[in-house]
Length: 299
Ligand SMILES: Cc1cc2nc3c(=O)[nH]c(=O)nc-3n(C[C@H](O)[C@H](O)[C@H](O)COP(=O)(O)OP(=O)(O)OC[C@H]3O[C@@H](n4cnc5c(N)ncnc54)[C@H](O)[C@@H]3O)c2cc1C
Image 1 (cartoon, protein in one colour):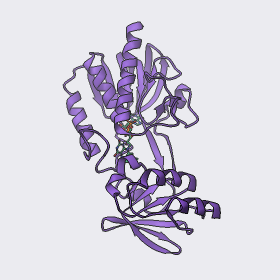
Image 2: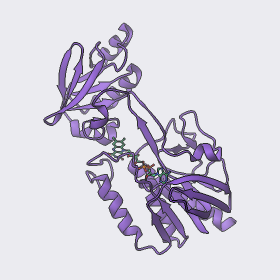
Image 3: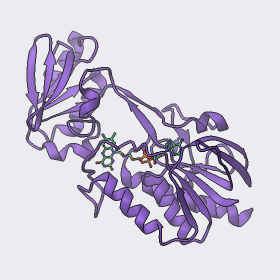
Image 4: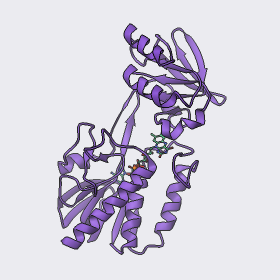
């Protein structure tokens, strides 16, 4: 019986494991090897690790965790979580079952991208979503934004002071005249022809439409959505926020006692959505580990 099983070994789960290990609380960290930034070559806006490959970040974290006897890591997917506070069972893809007093869910989310040919291949290297993570690398250069218009406008607000020329493209249907006017007022060029394909060219991206091609330094995707990578919120009947994320309190507690959540799949009700970033996921993982320790001390 572990004190905690942490499902997920991205920044949230790795940090939760470090905090529990340092506090000599036996913890099992599970990793199915599917990371949100799995295609990214260099992560940014991470102090003391700006520009570090995410894979290197995770490898260093694991090396450091190896110094803590109370942390065990298994590279296997969890399939089900059942039980109540004080006695949870996690069934693993290798047929094993493991038990813990508390559970931390840190399984992250998956980006469902719009079905534009070539987009998936560019994801994280030529096509991005987060201005805080990848805006500066496009300073002064031309970029494309794939709409819808309202979300494109938000991205223009963030990227406008950083990049050069911005062209906004619709994804499946063209923009209305009102949307074109609104986007143009934001100093963006607007393509009325939807993007039909993306491809890498030299150090840029070629955007194809039925009215011709344009080459830009990179593409920011305002279209698409996220969903939970793992089914545990449903399995455990956790309360979700309108954003679709698991609702947590300041210590990462969910609506089910003994179940904590941290990282991109969870946020507090005071925020409009998850603040998806490496450091914030790690901070949430640390808070969830503190929450686990608090519960263990009371229990
Ligand atoms: C293209 C792109 C670029 C980004 N660039 C940056 C950047 O430059 N800087 C920045 O701060 N943020 C960046 N981000 C955001 C950042 O990647 C996320 O905020 C961060 O990875 C969230 O961490 P997490 O621990 O919540 O989830 P993840 O990192 O996604 O980790 C989830 C973990 O859960 C595991 N898992 C899932 N299901 C199971 C299961 N059933 N059993 C066992 N394990 C499971 C996975 O294997 C993985 O270990 C970027 C995101 C994208 C999409």
